[in-house]
Length: 367
Image (cartoon, rainbow, N blue to C red):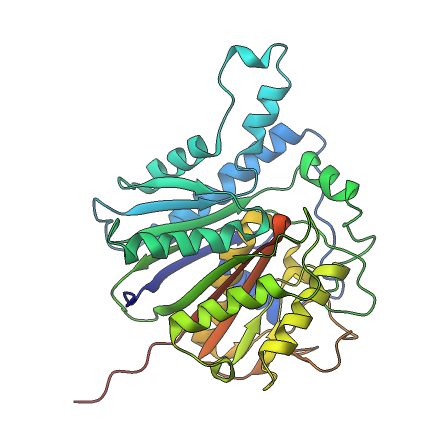
């Protein structure tokens, strides 16, 4: 099946203390001495979360639309989120008789953000655990590919709350110190609040990045743990490569999910080792940003686009002593690699796996 050429024409991002993609990318190139410190937990979750949700989501919409052309009437809007505006849900849960009014939904959150962006076309939420962000990008691309929308905005957003922290504590997945993806001393993840958005279209434009291929697969191994052989992730990567009509050795850089948990990092390392015998460089950023859940896929794809545009690859944040000696991690200092193609991966609860291939469009021939 032939697929339309789909481009990322505009990008915006806001994460924790970084109000834009430029500030975040600069921090990744010069990471602080102690990256990945756990995000503060709100003492009044619904109040703090409400402020963060509005601030982050509205900021990235303003950044995305600022100075750009107007949206077509059929433009779509896809939100990737695990919890959405959790403040509204927490308020509903703490009412004396919450059942007396409808429970807030993710689709309501999506509709509100779509209105804020001025979107009139199809708008809905994708909630596939920690793959929600990449799933939103894939869904947005599919809307354009099937001509259900001529353009589409894909957004990922989530904020840290007591509710989310308690869930990861119950799984013993939180780090006792800092997040160290792929490090021998890694002991878990940290959490972060973020929102990121992208505008997808069929026209390349200056600085656009081609979304060359994508794939998704489930491994059905466990409710929360990944298949240790990485079969689901491998299949998702294979599907992305097939769509892009690429061989594995044509991938220049792998941008890993890299949560810093024992099982996820080992699973990804297994999949990368089996898929890429040419050992491309690998990077990951959750050691600085924390795990931003549904925002992670879009946020990290935004960083991947910036890598393609600048040619500079940040090191794996938090990694000092790699646990997988046969893989080629970017450690310590940024590297000027000028990759043309980047594979972005994501994995989540329920055995969900996603893969996205980003590519610099070939330069037009001189006339």
